[in-house]
Length: 120
Image (cartoon, rainbow, N blue to C red):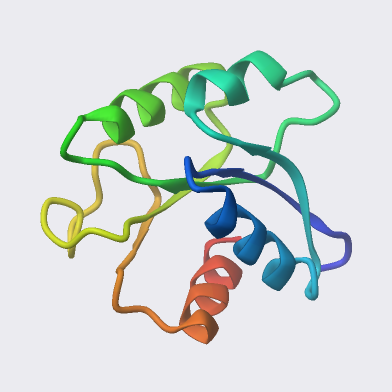
């Protein structure tokens, strides 16, 4: 990577957002947007700040994750979407429509970064 990859982080848990942001900022990643939900991300997007990757905490039980992916792909079709979830079940070992990669809840932090590196 020659320049910092721009990442948007969607997670309704401020602690998780801060932890992931702090970890990734130590590498060639720039966390450009941190938001609670997909609608907030869409509202804050401008031509200048469209991220290369969106990290999305995926809530399959409420179908919020599916709706967010659909909104993001419509607004920014070239943006990569990586989903992760702290719940086991519907997203494990499958890629929901529109997502580029699923990061399992069993993934180590090193594997988390490696998955992002491969996606980019």
